[in-house]
Length: 432
Image 1 (cartoon, rainbow, N blue to C red):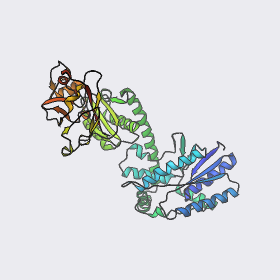
Image 2 (image 1 turned 135 degrees about the vertical axis):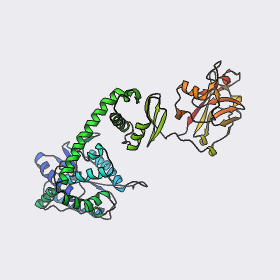
Image 3 (image 1 turned 180 degrees about the vertical axis):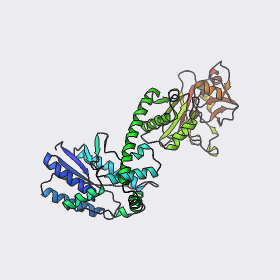
Image 4 (image 1 turned 120 degrees about the vertical axis):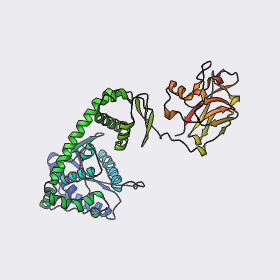
C-alpha cells in the first residue's frame, strides 16, 4: 500500500461529488491514490440507494483509469435520549471517517464545506449564544491526533460548485432530509436564508469573513490563556493568587481554556459566570462537572474525576453498625463505607466496635487530634488539618457517648490512649 493517499468524505451529494471529482483529476496527474469514504448513517430509508449510487459512480470512474478506492461503513447504534440526532450523526461520522482513513494509510481527509456552509454555521452559533470559538465556525485546516482535516473549498461559493457540476455533468444523490424543518440548519437554509440574502446580497461573504475574524480572535485568546496559565499552574491545579492578578476577562478566559484542557469538554458559560462571582482567596467550595467536580480550597483550584459529592437523603442513612472483623463495611445511605484493617501499632481495640452508632454532625462535637492533645470543635480541627468541605462527609462513629472516628480526621485521640487487643485502623471511603 502506497503512502501517497488522500481521503475524501463522500456522501454522494452534489458538493462532495464535485470535490471528489476534482481531487481525482489532480491525483491522476500526481500519482496519488484517492480513498472515497462513505458513511451509511442508517437514518434515511434511501441510505442503501445512496450506497449503490456511489458504487456505480466509483465503478465508472475506475474504468476511466482514475485512482479511486471506495470504502463504506455502516453506523450502528442510535442517539441517546435527549441527544440531538444531528450532533450524534456528526460525531459518529467523524469517528468513522478517521478509522477508514487510517486503514487506507491516508493522513489527510478532504471535506466539501463551502462559503455558504460557513456563513450558515456562523449564524447558527450566534443564535446559540456562542463565544468567539463557536463563531469561528469551521477552520480551513485542522490537525487532530495526527489526522489533517482540510476544507479546500471553504472560500468557494455555492454557485461556483453548481457550475462545476454542470460543466462535468456529474450525477449525484439528493438527500431528502435536507428539506426536513426539524433540523436547525434546514430551517435556516429554507426559511431564513432566502429573505436574508434578498435583503443583504453580500450576507454570505460578510458572515464568512466574520467567521474568519472570529477564528483569529479565538487563536489570540488561546495564546493569551497559555501565557496566563503558565504563571498560575500549581501541579495539576491553578493558584488563585496568580489568577487574582488578571483582569476579570483574562481570568475567565484562562479558566475556560484550563477546564477544556483538563476535562476535554468546553465549559458552559454558566459555570464561568459562577466562578467569576464565587471564587476568592479563601473560597472552599465545589462545582459539578460532567465527569467529576471542580474544587477550590486554600487558594488552589483543581479538577477531580469521578462523581460529584452529593448528600444522600437522611431517611436512607444507616444508624448502627456492628464490626467484628477487618474488612469493608458498605454504608450506601451515607454514600460510602468503612474500611477496617489490622493496625501494626496504634489503632482502636476491635472489641470496642461490636456496636457503633452512626450520627450526623450537629455542630457541638469536639475531637481530640491525638493522645494528650486538647479536644477542639470539629470545624477548627478540619481547618487545622486542611480538610476541604467535600471531604467532611460520612457518619461520625460513636461507642455509646464516646466519639471514636470522624471521616477526614480519623480516630479520636482518646480512643488511641485506651488499652486493648487486637487493634484496627478505620478509614472512610466514598462509594463511586
